[in-house]
Image 1: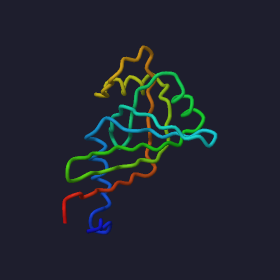
Image 2: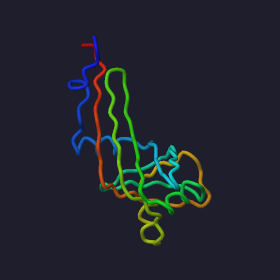
Image 3: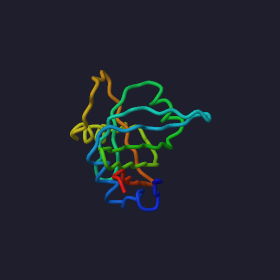
Image 4: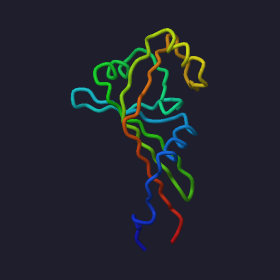
Amino acid sequence: MGFDDEHRITPLSDDACWELLEANDLARLAVSVANRPDIYPISYLSRDRKLYLRTSEGSKLLELAINSQVALEVDRVDDDHASSVVVHGRARRLEKEAEIAAVEQLPLRVRLPIAAPVYVEITPEMVEGRAFDFTPE
């Protein structure tokens, strides 16, 4: 028995994509500078169809300053099903005190302490997702 892509892989609606983004807080952030892509694991928060992350000064932030175009992927997997969402968009470092204060009020889960946090907002330009059915035929 082969894997039938037509019936076992289905696109997710825009609302289903955002439900998955809102239900998770771990993702992979892809950036690219000088034709060299990098992928970083991140904690994030989805709010009002934007994504927020807290980071520190370093290579990830430098790469975002050079090329603000990013991709972010989040997945959910269980025994019989999986879903994957990819967001393409623009990242920008939040610098205004009011923006930073607003994001600091959000329940952004951070797994590692950061002495001097920097906040980044990702504005999606395209959101796509797929669901996979692994149940036996």
